[in-house]
Length: 243
Ligand SMILES: [Zn+2]
Image (tube, rainbow, N blue to C red; front, side, top):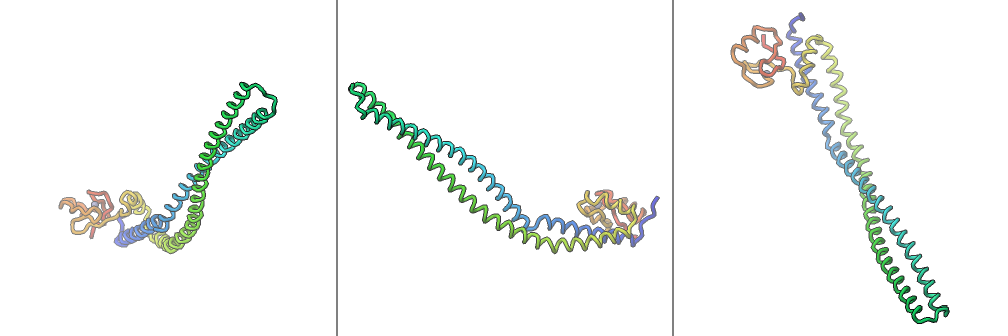
């Protein structure tokens, strides 16, 4: 059975808790720096832009293939038309019927060329739109990259002061802990997270300062008869009982 904590132990425990509260507050501030939040937003936007740029690149590849295919087909059709023309005017064909059918072939080839040229025009327009989108994204991305760099510096500067303060508090904390028994520390540590940093409360005029519940008289009397560090019957926090 461990010894009851002394008055000094109890004030040491409350001081440790104050230090831990300050440490938690600084950690929270570090996680929640406005510069960090802005940085997170900027980085999220950069990821979004990268994704859009990737999608545009895939589209561009596809449209480029389509462009080359149409250009190739138009080339072939033009060669065919030239050959048909050459035959038409070579003087080799004298039958009017044959000439008429050749004329019809040339017309059909010209129509196909014209259709392909219309398609090619549409493809070129899509290409232009994609390239313009790509330029816009690149511009925004470059601007964002500069901003991310600035924000990172600002975040680091803002964090610097807090990190220095945190380091000092860690030293104080270690010193405060070294003055307390393992038993007391164990009772404190097992509650610190459960009670969001407030593991120790005080019995103040019949009320627990942790849960702010006024305890029934018989519970107050039990606590007053018990050890100087009890447990709140309502919330379970460690309770410093006045002598
Ligand atoms: Zn309580």
